[in-house]
Image 1 (cartoon, rainbow, N blue to C red):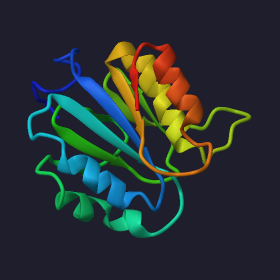
Image 2 (image 1 turned 90 degrees about the vertical axis):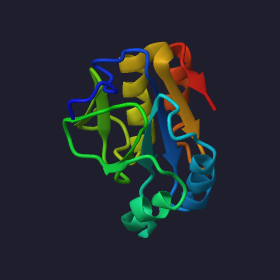
Image 3 (image 1 turned 180 degrees about the vertical axis):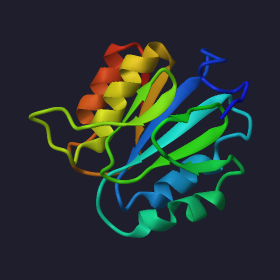
Image 4 (image 1 turned 30 degrees about the horizontal axis):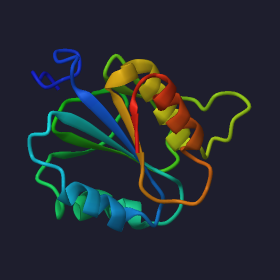
Length: 156
């Protein structure tokens, strides 16, 4: 995507990583009901493994936002005023404003895809990163929240 809203051209863009469990599609819908069309932020939704509802996540989210919604592919450039959906259980990293397929770090649970993305968000964006966990009772996301906070980012 060659776009003036791309992170590489607009390093001030806030990147918001949103961790959500399989049962959290209602919560993510309510979140996007309140996001303005031109917020200047990029949104990366990371699903925790489980459930088939994520197969329809883009269709369900389209009912709650006018922002363009993209299913993530490795190498995709992140831009403001866009929503990116990372499939549940798919480890992705953010490097120089691009979403890249990643291998889970050795000795970690490969099911902690939210933690892995938040860690990469902290490293790539520092204080321009934000991490939000909307639903879930498990530990996935808790370490990543600390990483974003320690990098100077916003944690909700």
